[in-house]
Each structure stands twice: as structure tokens, then as C-alpha cells.
Length: 330
Image (cartoon, rainbow, N blue to C red; front, side, top):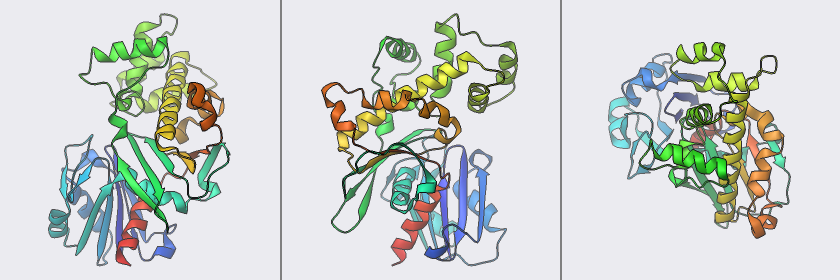
């Protein structure tokens, strides 16, 4: 029995798998609020109390860097180590890997139903693959062909310097520089960043007025992102401030995806994962994202044949962690 997990700053997604052939049908599966637990072992114990089966192996994708078997969640005060988890959970083998590393492991196993394709392109056989995932934070990873199969590589590219591409984004950078010592892409292209864009536009643009009903909703919640997204997606009661926020978010994300595609020469494709994109699909389908993706001057022609996909499967990191766990068993 394999325990797989997608450990994030907002939620942790756990599942038990009996075999590699049953990845779409786990024995038990649950999403738990990460912040409700003091550490990962407490959360896992709560989950395992629901089943009375021995677990031989565990593999967790975690939202943060993993070095020498130890990890810290970027947006959560949890310290983890493989050795400590083995002892505390009484599981013989525990492996930690970066959550984007886990998601990258899942890419070769994705089907057409798992994807929304923005650009069919002309993929190169065994070409490099880029993965970027805006969730609570902004994760980036990539895959390269090693002669036999695709090999996943984690990175912390989401924390690189935010590079504006127009006057509006330059003003956004100036706004954020007054609030952060270092302004990264995560500060604009993630669940952490979306409220930053919203606040910037509300303060900068008088015609984008925050409606009273929206002010009341925002004042009543700890996490403003669901409110902003719902207001942007509501055609019956449109909020231009929220729609402009999401549009700018998607534009900046498209530019960063293009940056990553150029750095990796991602001729095998670019995959956009994470929890946010499936919730705002119309903003990806109106052409804004692909325009920003391709806007690279004389190198635009290099990007045109690269396939670009939105990952619709919300279990991607969990599946990747499970695949990696079963690979380690072989």
C-alpha cells in the first residue's frame, strides 16, 4: 500500500493506492486544510485513522525546496524530514519531493481529457517540456529526455525577479517595491500575488471602482482570491476591477511562460498547472495569454510551434507523487 500526498500551503491532498494500475481509483482519498494541523505527521495521522491498513511506503510532493531529504513548506511553518516522518508515522520508507517535481512526473501520463490546449503547435519528439503552476505560490519545473524516458527536474523559478513588459506593469513593480524587499513572479502570478494586483489596480485606477457589495464580501473573508475570481467570472453582475485583475494576472503569466519556454527551448510543450488556471479558463481562451506568451520580439517565431496546454486535472501532483513512489518500488 502506497500513501501519496500533495502537500500545499492551503490544502493537503492525500490518497492510498494499492497498485500502479489503480491511480485513477484510490482506496481512499481526502483533501484536508493544511493550516488546521501543526505539522504533516499530525495531518497524516488524522487521515490514516480512517483506514486500518498497513502502509509500506509514502511519497509526498511538497510546496517548497527539498534538500537532502528535508523540506520546508514555502507558505506554511512546517519543517519536514524523511527520517522523522518514517519514525513518527511508522512507515518503512518515506520520500519527499518538490510538488512541481511531482507534477512533472505526471505529465507523460496525462490524457487529452486532462488538458485544454491553447496551441496545438508542432511538438518535437523527446523535446524539453516546461511546467509552470500558479497555486498558493508559483511553481516551476521541467522535463528532459534521458535517452529512455522523461526525467523531471525541480526549480524555484517562481521566485525570480518580476520583469514588467509595459507601462502598467512597470507601475505595478514600483507599487510592489514599496511593499517587498524583493519582487518575484510569485508576488504577481499566484494566490499570493492575485490580491497584490487587485490592490494595485484599485488604488491606481479611479474608474475601476470597488462595488459596495464586493467590499462587504472581501471584509468578511480571510482569503480574498475566491471572491475576486467569482466576481470576475460573474457575467450577471460583472465587476470590471476584478476582471481587469484577472486579465493582468493572465497576461503576466503568459509572459513568464514564454520566458521559461525560451530558456528551456521547450519544443516538447508548455504545461500550465496549478489550482488557479482551471477556475479562470475564459481569460486564457480570449487570446490574451498566447499574445503575451509569443511577444518576444525576433524570437517570437521560436515560440509559435511550441504546444501550450492548461492542465485541467486537479489531481496532477497527487498522481505524480504516486507514480514516483511506485517507480521507487521497482
